[in-house]
Amino acid sequence: MLDLTNLYRPKSAEEAVRALLEGEGTGLYVAGGTIVVPTGSPSLDYLVDLTDAGLDYVEVEDTSDGRVLAIGATTRIADLSLSPELASPALRALFEATTDLGTHTVRNRATVGGNLYAAHFPSDLPPAFLALGASVRLQGVDGPREVSLEDFYARRSEVYRRGDLIVEVRVPGGHEDLASAFEKTGRTRVDVAIVNCAAAVTVSGGTIEAARVALNGVSAIPFVAADAGAYLTGKSSTEDVFREAGRLVSASVSPRGDHRASADYRRKVAGVMTARALSRAAGGA
Image (cartoon, rainbow, N blue to C red):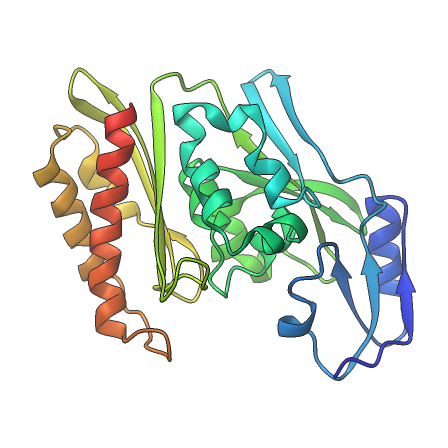
């Protein structure tokens, strides 16, 4: 049971970082609050409530590198799913991940930043953002900085420091020929995923020019299946090719079993989810 002594309500990301670092005892950032009990502990002393920190937005930016979809970390997942930007084939994986996540009650409370931070559940948004080549903007005690989401998971101890706060997710745009899709399997439709997968492909004249496949639930962290992406590049956009990519994924992962599924089941499902996501993404390219 949580026994809190303080609740801080900063007005900015900078104030939030200071509040977490200067609070007495052990603190936790909170926005939607859906992971406070699962991630908290009896020794948790205070919360830093991000509700008023100005991080709830979905915007399109024109940068020197092209259009970028900028999503504030405290944006509710239900609100993100309603964004007209997610209607494009390129962002279909993200739309499907937001609508497949939990119940409508959870989606109305859970936030984008919280779902990315709590990827060990495994959560649904990380594979979609990874497949789309997203980055995260972090606010630290020394100011803001941007890191790729792939590095955020694979090199977390190097790129994420104590007190750092996810303030924004940035998805590169401008890929007119890109299409993506998201797949998930669980014990029930609203349960935490056993395996989830997102694929993003660019197809021209029946040939795959580029592909990214990302999964969660078959490793300690969400990850990009680089071998599958390398195999797909230059191949014909056919079901046989997608099934082979799925086989490569199944052969490369070493998941753990738990009360939801055995390791062997997860391994097989990872291949099926990969082939299925690729097929659907290619169909929309």
